[in-house]
Image (tube, rainbow, N blue to C red; front, side, top):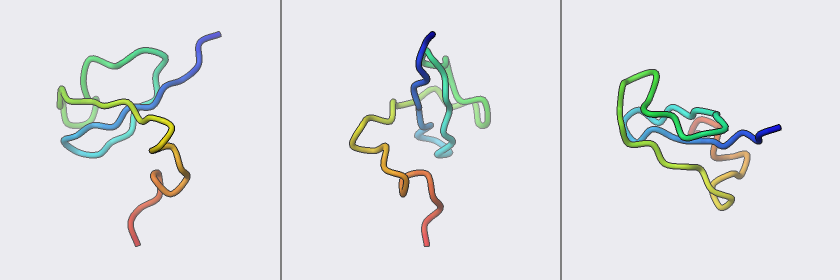
Length: 50
């Protein structure tokens, strides 16, 4: 079983979950996705700003 990896789009901040890096953002079509690493995987990263 493959584990999910999380990627964020630099263009629209959409988070994608996939075992492999997606070719681009499904929402805005952006090509710049970066993997969310352990230092960014805090629960607060996924919450909207207050």
